[in-house]
Amino acid sequence: MSASGGVDVTRLLQILAITLALVAPAMAQAQFDTQAKFAILMDEESGTVIFQKDADLPMEPASMAKLMTIAVVFHQIRDGQLKMSDEFFVSEHAWRTGGATSGGSTMFADLNSKISVENLVRSVVIQSGNDAAIVLAEGIAGSEGSFAAMMNELGEEIGLSDSHFTNPTGLPDPDMHVTARDLADLARYLISKFPDYYHYFSEPEMEWNGIKQPNRNSLVELGIGVDGLKTGHTESAGYGSVISTKDGGRRLIAVVHGLTSMAQRTEEGRKLITWGARAFERFSAYPDGAVVAYANVYGGTSASVALVGDGEVALYLPRGSRKCLSASVSYTSPLMPPVMQGDKIAELHVFCDDQLVQVAPLFAAETVKEGDIVRKATDALKQLALGWM
Image 1 (cartoon, rainbow, N blue to C red):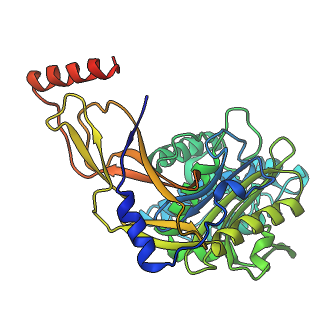
Image 2 (cartoon, helix red, strand yellow; image 1 turned 180 degrees about the horizontal axis):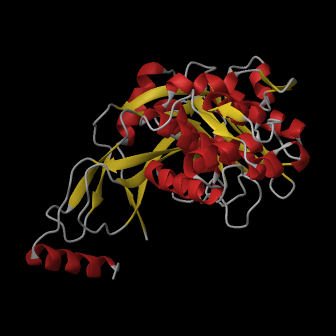
């Protein structure tokens, strides 16, 4: 069941009033649309969502699954278990399944050759090489299946709760699925945790075996500040892309998927990322550590727990908005102890003229342990009175 907590809307409006004169409100999120079946737009620094469309529905990742492959590789390098200079063997399986004869995106790697991890990484992110992804998987884990287990383990660690990976390439498999939100969170993880390697995503082209291929992310060359991350396509899934840009003074991450052509993928991705960069103004609503609201706790040492943002809670409002702001906090209640400090508890929903414009996660500011029998009995009576039991 969902419960809503009050937010200090007066405080938020005061923030706006200090900065802005009062004029008519502008269009909100719901009045922007995209032809993509699935989409999300996220602020990279805070993780707040500015736009979403079926962002939590399962979808086939296609080659965007390779972002998790790269995440595992970067994780191995960071932990000292792998070096960019290490070389991996091109097996017959990798050559046949992902090579030139497969009909899919490929590095054109020679059978029985050895290729450095760095060149394999470059191929995966620039060329979307299926053979390169399989070579990495076999070189790290011995097989695609064992590597997929590593992908899912890391995905769970990152918090990708609605995704499951079965291979390193994104080739169709009925058991493999992701969500747009999880792909955006994965992109955010790659950008924030591995800044020294992010430059690979914006390389314009790569040549291997005398064959030069451009970056499959055509937005990289449009001059709109896009510097990553990955495209994907299968007949069943359609065309999709995970995109990032710093245009507009902050880094945004966008995901679009389920489109009908490469041209439509490019256009819908460009529209969403440009709209996000130019149509919003940023305001600091709550500084790092400031309490946004409280959530009720059933049977705990405290009857409630304070909720804070992941660092500063910033608002991104449509330019020209002056009077439209309202907000609420939603969480599943009643919360059961123990509630640990740092647990994701709730979401702050920000509205402009009753249209959702932003969702920001809220976390427990403190630990609330299980209470004694008196506390449990008292809370049980409260629950009965409110009709929750």
